[in-house]
Image 1 (cartoon, rainbow, N blue to C red):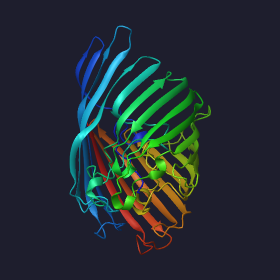
Image 2 (tube, helix red, strand yellow):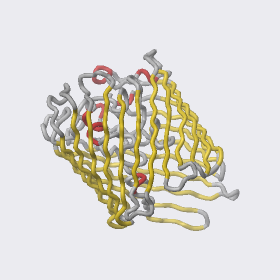
Image 3 (cartoon, one colour):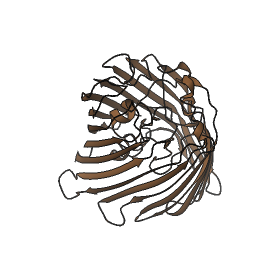
Image 4 (cartoon, rainbow, N blue to C red):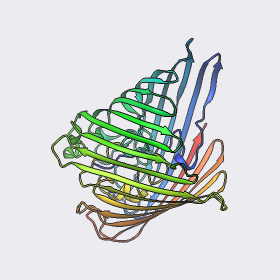
Length: 429
């Protein structure tokens, strides 16, 4: 089982570092009724000097994801709203396929993505259908975005855009949100995944959080209700531990009332449904923005640790590079299994904004493997990236990565530094 991907940038478009609003062509907007045509495309080209399962020793490949559809709402007499979204997603991969070999470069797929409807007022929001479910910053639950191609088994193919991971919505959901923007609020949810590489689990949970000026305190519980195993690749993707699994966490994120300070932490404990050993995971992060200096640079340090056997579930790309895919090469290609399990990670991130439309960043990761698996190794990685909002309809983001394992593994029989490159073009309409 490989770590699930969740990079498709969707409404956040490069997450926390570029807060670009969603784009839509307004078709109807009158007397409380609105209908929008939503279109968003993202294209990426990638190269890796090392292969981690791809037949090509230095693969180069391309990925694309285009989402298009409608969203809207109608306002009722009591100032509540009925709302809904329907969209489809077209994805594809070209070239040699991605570096770990889960795609071959010949994948193409078009299918419905988000199809859901709901009712909401100031304190209650209830929705059902195929949609994304996210809690906190995605440390445990971000979306259903593991997107394999034909490289492992054609039955796992979800369109082949492995890094972009366009398919994020859970197949079936019911979500009830109670509370306003601040104070005490609650989420009750149920979802069922049709993703064969995730074991097609059914899960339900509750999230309770308190939002105030000093930050958000939260508590979260997730229960695995069932799985629907396929036996593909000898059952490596069946995730049988999720049937009966219980995951609980507490978290905080905010500035503790201190301007320019950033704090974030979460502790999770997990009981497996197949009597495997229990496992914990946690992280603590602190950052500071030097707002009075040119370019307003910021520095963050984070320590995260994941017990051997910890199931990283539906974690994903949420508030920028490194959350929660730690290192573009290590997390996405080289780890030969779930990245956020059996590892301790030290991370330092530096970011600056030369202009209102340009962000420059550097990320450093130090990985200490605690699994003892032959596929993995202690390693270090550096990522250098930029995010440039060219105009309202184009964002360009290049990233250069350098990944160095401490020892040879069964995946790569050398300790050479891998030079990795990706270039993204995000086109919101």
